Length: 133
Image (cartoon, rainbow, N blue to C red; front, side):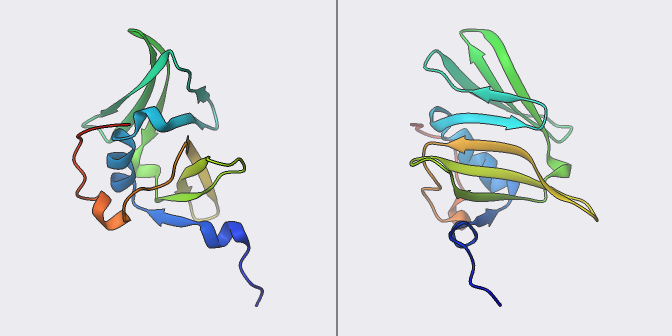
């Protein structure tokens, strides 16, 4: 058996609901977010909005003033778990929303943040929106 790589050692997982609650508290910490179909890059003139729909979709919207720049539609039924790891650049933390099928495991959506998880993942489940960065 070989020793795990630095990337493998730095990976942590959590459930989607805990990650989403944490993400909503850190909208100004998103550097970029995307899927296989789109990449949204943050800018000082943009802000992020989050919507949880009754039909199971989660929506991350990038907005300029009141104009929608782009949005990511996340089907919570397709997300098995969220995997976090250190990004390639200093002060970048990657959160991959992993979709699994019988034959494949892919990062269907990704959020790159300016910092990692501040709290223990168990505490994230009880997070309530308050002050944000």
